[in-house]
Amino acid sequence: MLIQKLRLYSKSYIHVTEFLAACVLGLLLGAVSIWASPIGVMLVFAGGVFALAATRRHELLLLAYLIFTSTIIDDTYNPSISIGIGKMYLTDVIIFTAFVLIVLRSLSEPDFELIHTPLDFPLIMFWGVTMFSTFLAIFQGNITLNASLGAIRSVGSYLLFFAVTNLVRKERQLDLLWNGMSLFAIFTAFGMIAQYIVGSSVRILPGRVETLNTEGVSFSDITRIIPPGDALIFFVFIVFTVSIMLKARKSSSISTLLSFGLLGLGTLLTYKRHLFIGFGIAVILLFVLLNSRDKVRLLAWAFASTLIITIAVLLISMFPGSKALEFVTASSNRFLSLVSEETYSNPNSSLQWRSFEYQYALPQIASHPLIGMGLDTRYRPFVRGRDYLPGGDFRRFVHNGHVAILLRSGLLGYMFFAWLSVAFIWRGFKYWRDIPDLRAQALVLGLTLTYIGILIGTVVSPIILTANWTPVLGIMFGTNEVIFKNFDVKRLRFDRLSTEAMDG
Image (cartoon, rainbow, N blue to C red; front, side):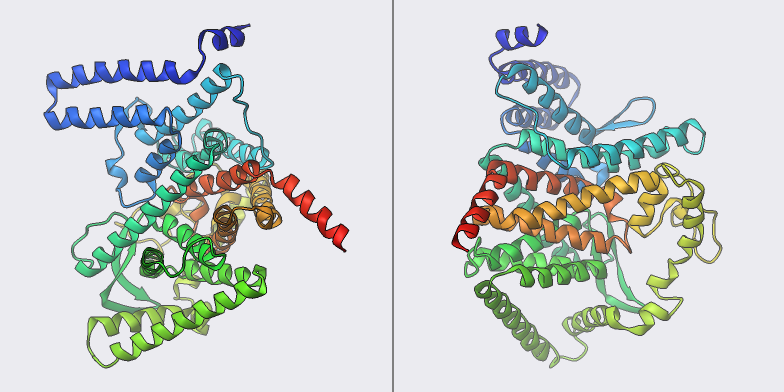
């Protein structure tokens, strides 16, 4: 009865939300103008205009979320207010608003039905088990609510999946979301190049900006840069590669070549070896999946890229002592360390050094097998010779993301995460060929390959639980499901298989 009245008196939730937003904006402007500067008034006005726009283009909420978590914006610029138990950030308001919009639209619009996908249940259960474990740890006094809020937000960012599947329904919405994320990635890569030029002594980007050190060899003039936007760069770089190979993007256009180069250089400047491996595996799998003609294109690109890099290295080698030559040397050293025996056998190598974490994590997993210890609880003591102060409290940190989930969510939580991961990858490989639109096809395959690289890379870095990666992952999961629904891939796959059977 209540729902019928809501639908009767409100033809669309948009009119209500726009009216309320306009009223709130007017009140805020009036209040702010009393005590704030003109700049403050302008910022409030700009935020109000954005909020009004987001009532019609919901994908703007997702892009706004990414701006504060996964670009070149330091998290200290994420506006917040104190709420007693901690702080409430603008990103919290954004994700809450997205779910409010879903509820309002489902109540007020007869044609708006909640979207259900095969990923819903494992994602909800993974999040639910993790939250239950964490709140149990809080109740038992193993951690405070305030101390766990950061990790709770990180895992909660996976719920952006539901904002994507329920609020991003039209092709133009998906285009704006994808183009916005691509622009953020390219802009982040450009910022990384600028940071590299000025060096590590002048910090212009948040995140890690440091002198490169590879297995004990320090390169004083080489800056390693890991901004919050490294997740977007990696994701967009692989999607760009797939798009070019599938002819979804013109490979001869200047914008494509420039963007591809910036994203590749941005990935390189992180000097994250697990990203290099992830990209390599994605390219190998792409080669296996492509048809004969597209395989030739991929080989041609690989040959051309190798030739260009070889010529550039030969030219640079003519200038000994130059910064460019040191860049080549440092990059080569980083790549070669992937196949160096010392990386895997030397107890002081960065890979082997962190193995001591397993000595403490595995017994804790055995002691808390079902639902784990909860987010951000300490699983080990201070280890002399391994922990260095001041440098942060790493007694909560474990490099292996899979072990981290087992530690925080137990076998039950990891089972649901594995279910979610397998379902996403399986559906990506199953349906990508049935999508008639090349751009959407490339996006689905690119995201699927990206996630495989992420699952492998998280063995040495807990990116599947990291605050700047989880929003991107949630949006990735949702994007594929939106494309599957928009193109009705089940029907298209049935038609294709039926045709092939008849032809056979």
